[in-house]
Length: 414
Ligand SMILES: [Fe+2]
Ligand SMILES: [Fe+2]
Image (cartoon, rainbow, N blue to C red; front, top):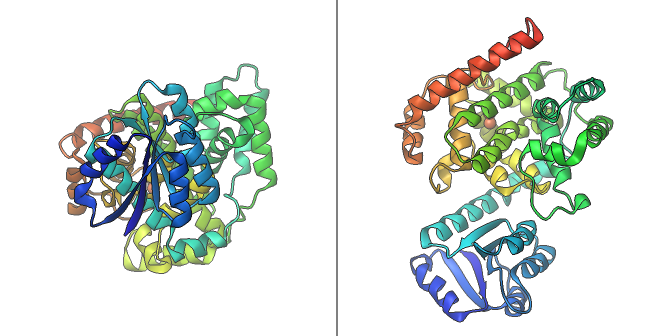
C-alpha cells in the first residue's frame, strides 16, 4: 500500500482532503500533518511514497518543506498545492516539487495525479531498471551537431531559430541543453521546457560550447553490428513525431512540452544501442524472427523497454517531469489515468500517427491501426478526431518535405 502524507496548516483543509479521498483508504495509507515541522516528524517516523503539501504555511512553507524532503528522502515524490494568486511562490515550488497543483484541487484531479506519480515510481523502482541504469553513464551525443552548429554560428545571418533547428535534430543534445539550462548552475527558479527558450537563454556561444563539451565526452561508440544509419534514422524520425505533435490541437504550453517529449521520446534506444549493444542487437533479431515490435522484444529480453530507460535517465537529469512521464508511457499510455488530451496522450497520438503514416520507421508493426490502437484512442477520447489529426499531420509533413528538398537539394525526407 502506498503511503501518502498530506500537509497543510489548516486542519479543516486536511479534513476536506480526508473526506474527498475516503474511497481510496483501502489502496492508500493516508497520513495528515498540520504544518511543516509536524510533516518532518512524520517522515522521520516512517518513509512516505508521496508527500502533498500546501504552499503557503506560516513558519516553514511548502517549498522549504519539500526541499528538506528532497534532500533527506530523495525517493519520496513531492507534490505541491498552490493558489492561483501565488505565482511567485509557485515558481519556487516548481524547483522542488514533482508537480504543482492549483488550489482548490478537485478529488478526481488529485487522485489522478497521485496515481500517475505512483505508477512512475513503481516503474523506476523495478530491479530491471536499476540493473540497466547501473551500467549506463552519460547519454551519448553526436558530433554532427557540433559541426552543424559551428558552421551556422560562423555564418553571417544566423538566427536563434536556425540554432534551435540544428539542436532539435539531435536527441541527446536537446536533452543536454535542457538539462544544463535547468541545472543549479543558472539558478533559474522556473524550469525551461522548450528548446527555443533554452537556446534563447543560453545564447549561441554557450550552445556551441555545450556541443563541444558533449563531443569531448562522446561515448557513443557504434557497435559494428548496429546499422550505421541507426542514429540518424532515429533522430529524423523523432523530429517527425515532433512535427506531427505541433499540428495537434493543444495549448501552447502543452504543445511546447509535447514537442520536447517527442524529440526525446526514443532516447532510451540511443542508450541501449550505445551502452548495451548485445541486448539491443538481440532485440532487433527477435523482432525480425518473430515479427514483434521493438518494445515487445525489449520487454521480453530485458523486462523493460527503451521507454522506461529513456524516461528514467531524463528524470535523473532533472528534465520536466511531464516530459519524463509522457516518454515513460509513450507505448503504453493507458496505464495512467488521463486528464483530457494531455501531454502523455498527445505524445502517444503523434507517435501513432507517425507510425501509421510510415514516417517513424523503427517498428515493423504499426503501419496500420490495430484494434488495440483504436481501443486506446477511444480511451483517450480522441478516436473521432483522429482522421482530422491525420490530415493536418500529412499536410505538415509534406510542407516539411518540400522545404527540406528546397534547402538541401536531393536530400529528401524518406
Ligand atoms: Fe519508442
Ligand atoms: Fe518512437
